[in-house]
Image 1: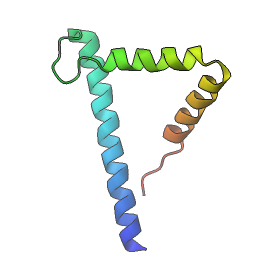
Image 2 (image 1 turned 180 degrees about the horizontal axis):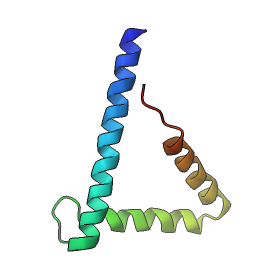
Image 3 (image 1 turned 180 degrees about the vertical axis):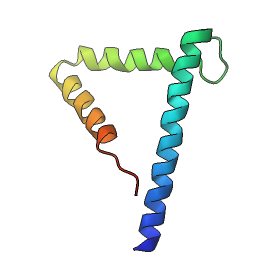
Image 4 (image 1 turned 90 degrees about the vertical axis):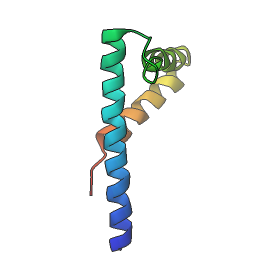
Length: 77
């Protein structure tokens, strides 16, 4: 069981790093624009995702709620 807890903590740490990089990419893309080599299309991708979910009506709303639930109920081990 200790091995599973170790893997869970690694996954949690990588997820935290990913969310921090996503937040950094959004802020940098909004401040500098879409000319950033690595973070440039992050805001466009997020806007496209929201547009796709919005055009799918109830299914998109349920999917968005599920994504929020996944991120809000996440706890590090």
